[in-house]
Length: 75
Image (tube, rainbow, N blue to C red; front, top):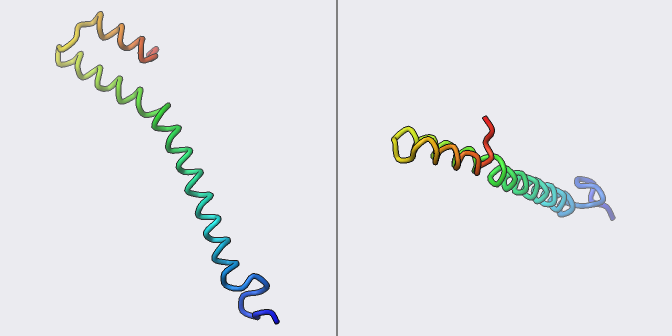
């Protein structure tokens, strides 16, 4: 006999579908988060710190330019 309220999957089938959808969302967000932290955020943070050190006079212009080129900033 079928349970009229939940269809052929029953209550557990619906729960498993929700769990699977949640797992997919977590995996996708984890992959996107790791890409951003490796490629997008770290060089900007390093460059900002380099600029602060140059502004405070801790490094000279030659060292600043060399490290900026090493970070790959062409601005």
